[in-house]
Length: 168
Image (cartoon, rainbow, N blue to C red; front, side, top):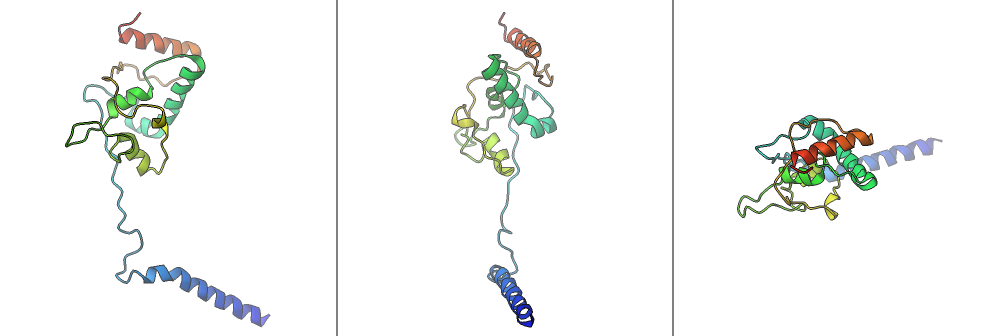
């Protein structure tokens, strides 16, 4: 039994030295990845229009709104603009300072990419959807309602959006 105790102590010592070995390589006292810097995501939005929900609400729940919109559109055929990904991109697009062109989703300056990289979340929306604006934003800023799952609520929202766009 004494032999087992000695072996455990030796193994613990070896393990401690192995774990400390990478730190010894940094003789200046810096730890690995201590120079890693993460830029804060930047907000780029329309100066003439507010978001459909308050900023903190959108940070926490934007995916719920996008998924709700997807379900309403794909499963029920109800198309509204309030929580449409296209409208998000129309307002939050980022332009290159030199060229004036909109940056694409694979560019770390892209609004969605900046936040998703910062949060370590994979984004796959732009495999199918446009990552740059396709037209000017046209949402009615007076509609700040939380989406609901009842068809009549979505139909009313659709009617409001069509009226705001000047369609019967």
